[in-house]
Length: 265
Image (cartoon, rainbow, N blue to C red; front, side):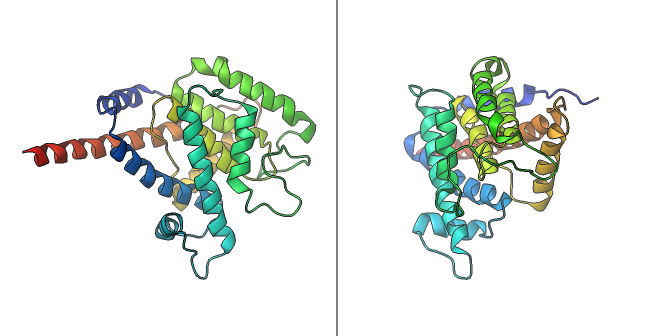
């Protein structure tokens, strides 16, 4: 029997993070700048992008294309980094609707509008059936109603879940519907981080290693084997990433605080 995820340590670490808030603008901007580069590299790497972290940094900070690398890979970085900025803006603007089909479509559009193939329309629900690995997503004529129900659930019953569990469920449920012809994985990870960011958690990413990519895909597939398959393995995978990210962020903030004290002395 698969055990339910225990979020106690995550809650404790979240309280430590809150102790350092509010961050000054320069510190917050630096943290976001580093995260934006690392997440853009990691999330596009999961989908086959060949640029390294250093090449991603040069491309995003200096706008320099990398010789011997496909221009498509460079454009994927630009698309994803813009979608990240949109996700962040939307998450911190409480006046906007918290979660909607329009937001999801706009994120998907930003994710790959520069690299869409002939016949593809970014940000529009697919009109053809697809098979993703072992998973067969719903037929096109079911997508609209399933997306409406997905958004309704996230804004209502989903709010009763732990924020990290809700973020994980949003990712899982969205990618299982697989509503778009392309960019679903990247969109799912942005939606996960939308939920985390708007509830005060730092955004996260699956670190770009072959081992973690394999685990990520395997535990996600386990949730899709049957309609009533348990989501706990995937929820635990996401919870572990959130916990590791919180620990890293706490150490960074502690070090920064110590450095400021040393400077004052």
